[in-house]
Length: 123
Image (tube, rainbow, N blue to C red; front, side, top):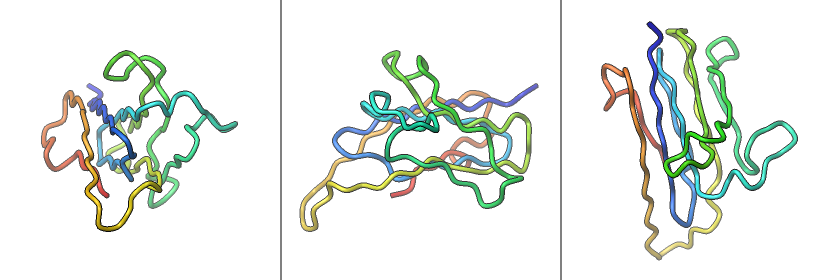
């Protein structure tokens, strides 16, 4: 049975830098308002996907209705590839030194045996 991890991430005023996925999982990340601007390659403006090697890259997509409140969400699927590893990444540009920033996130994990080790967000 295909293991599925759905991860919904929503960030207030600034965006999360990246979301990583480990072997055998899928991740969906929702970012506030990114669905309004999509580049010609189908990715949200300002976002890129990454994987250490092409053969280890999971399948990246934008899911139009999987978001926390029914909006768009970023998705990563491994499709049963145990070596798949990848993440979504964007730059945070509105951060000013010496000031406090607040990040908030939501996610949903399904069928992930070690969720705390398999889902991470890095700033």
